Amino acid sequence: MNEYETEVEARWGHTLAYKESRERTSKYTAEDFAMARADQEAASEAFQFCFANGKAIDSEETQKAVVMHRNAITKWFYDCTPEMQKNLALIYLADERFKKYYDDLAKGLSQYVHDAIFAQ
Image (cartoon, rainbow, N blue to C red; front, side, top):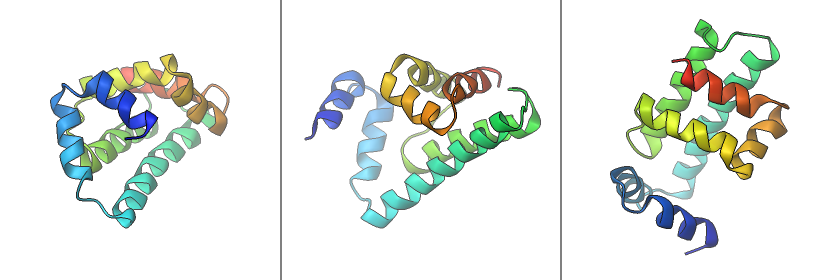
């Protein structure tokens, strides 16, 4: 197990979401993981587009990005409820790795994604 997997298991190994994700991904091929990544990147690009075009966090377009993000997680990993998605949004600001991912796409995007998810 690599360092990232060890951290994930330590933080969430006791949860149903973790168990569901492990069960699903244990059967994935490299192509499956590539498709999962593409779906996640598409959601990130939708957020980036809305952010760059000054869309309000509660706009129809931005909320479609929120749903796209949640649906990609549900499709590939675990049932991601709006409440679970809000928990993820907290991590997007608190964990520098996630914050960097979004802010490398556009400065301030991590806060925007967080706020959009909480606006649902």
